[in-house]
Amino acid sequence: MRLLITSDLHYNHRRSRPLADELIDRINKEAYDLLLVIGDTAPAESDALQVCLGRFTHPGPRLFVSGNHELWTDFSAPSYAVAQAADPTAHSHDLYTNYLPTKLREIGWHYLDTTPYITEKLAIVGSLGWYDFSFAQKSLGIPLRFYEQKISPGAAHYRERLDLFEITDDIAPSAMEIFARWNDGRFIKLGRSDEQFLGELLAQLKSQLDAIKDHPRIIAAIHHLPFAELLPPPRNAQWDFAKAYLGSEKIGQLLLRYRNITNVFCGHSHFPAQAQVGHIRAQSTGCGYNWKTYDILDITERD
Image (tube, rainbow, N blue to C red; front, side):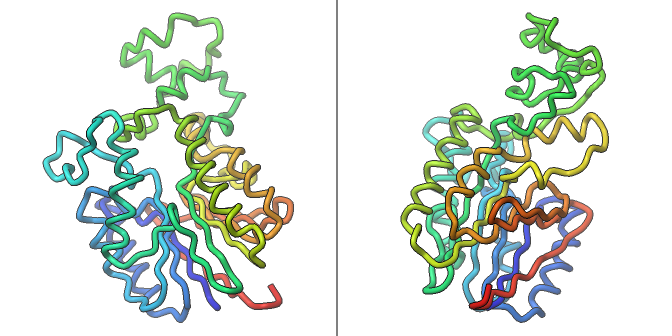
């Protein structure tokens, strides 16, 4: 059995779309049994999501995991009105829990976030994952409140976010030179804190794993990173600021409880990485806006 994995196609992005088309053309020529796409294909409410997934010609099972970009929304755009939530502050949460499962099923994809894919010898579970700032780089000297607001001290000062500067003695002077924002803060509306959302997702993933705890082999597909070992190397302060949003150590702690999980595949970081963490072989696909790739896992009984 061959599993083909890709992620982060960002099909709504002008620079990324032609590269995604080229990659899908290559994938359509491959021989494989299962197709797995691990998030950040396009916002759920955009036509790009269905167009992109419709280009895959694989006749067998097609498995999908949400990324944070699937949850992006913008009430000012008329095309972003597919799944208007009763509570606009939780619109992205509504997309994730209600709209996406229905939409993916309609277009013939298996939505792993809600339902594992199970065969006699293999089970695949999936989760968006999320972040709780456990990967924040302490060396930057940025207090938690800035990460929660998804803006660095330099950018917050420039935009006159004076509420974040009621206390200043906990901010490293060098942090004032960091100008960065994480766009989930602009385009995602969860109606709850990031830590609360992560807790919901971990409870959902645990429930799925408990239901198949006696299965001979499990592969996990998590959009956000579960292990610090997969984080990109240091590059600059803005880059290191973003690491706070790449995943959570709590995801990895949960996965390591299950001895029958052999592999974990991730996306999101746009950086290729592999690591052996305990009994789990973890791998980040490394797809980004300017480059696209895929991985193939040959699954044999001896594995």
